[in-house]
Image 1 (cartoon, rainbow, N blue to C red):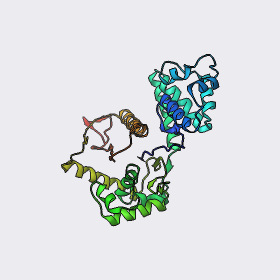
Image 2: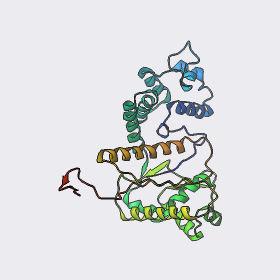
Image 3: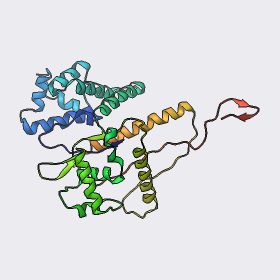
Image 4: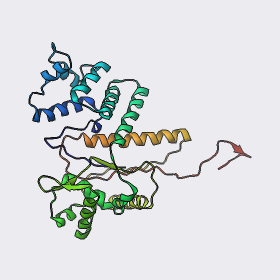
Length: 297
């Protein structure tokens, strides 16, 4: 799964699907809307929520001092003008943030993930040329960081490890043909989607080749003497089938949480990193039954 951050322009409202904190979403939405609608103030929101005698209700919600009930969740949905899918995500988000029950939190997190995955751009098998070379995804991410118009040499030097100018030109051409990038109002190429993904557990030769090239990059980073910070670790574990499935679920949550951190980053992106997570067998599966004192496989 691949994801990238796009920065919101002044005329756009933030997408609720990009958040794992409904309070931050509320405040970001208010700030964005106020730029085009100066009357969208704390007082006005309280009025729309039915809190005519309380001008501090909204501020207290954002600060975490007020619990948002199911009734007020519906009122917020009306004020925000959310559609059916957005409203469903927002309800799950409010419940996820406010519950202290671990089982409930896990349940609502799963709901959030299903909604979030459904709103990512799905790369179809016909578009898998995107994964033919590792640097296509790197350049796409770089375009969110780097204001690029036509200086291919400068962009090539920015990639780590460096690539040829022709490779940059071919990559830009491919990304534009797949509608994954487009020129903005200033003439700079920028990603057209907030995030892209493939189907879960997809098995395709190009995807497998792409992942192998990414592993080669990880080896290069491990052996290289880079000044930029890095974090590489290896763990060998022994687990049961049930434990393995729980580990898989933890990894899925970790990826989703990292994506949420990226999307909610208040600072302008200034670098591109590759994050690889691998979980693969180092042994055969052993039966729990002993046969003549020997574990069967």
